[in-house]
Image (cartoon, rainbow, N blue to C red):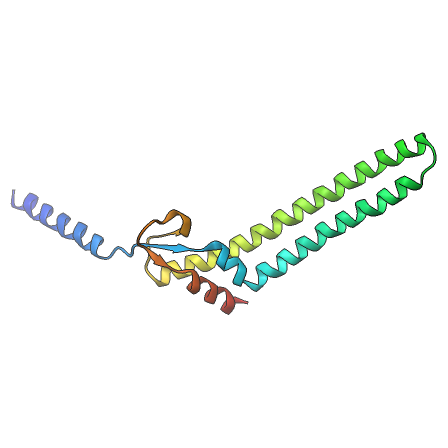
Length: 148
């Protein structure tokens, strides 16, 4: 019976110590991080340039289309350009998704490092926090600036 009581006291002590050592929750303003992260800006410019390139492609092809004189030539042209554009569009989507995932992964790694440094239990997006928590946005931005 003494061992049982001792076990309960030890269990209660460990539980209370665990609660006392809990780090809490941090939160991050993801949009602010993106706006202050040079790599994210570079990626955005790259993706935007690719989008503009596709728009210019369509403008150029529209000019070509207007210069065609027969309905058969126009139909053949439409079919060919439609297929070419689908290929370009898929390449654009693939590039965009890949680059966005790279940025997200780098930000997540920096946030994990800050979480460990600050001894936090979790990190949430700021929109999910109504009251409380620790804002780690600037810490993550500094971590990303130092990572290069």
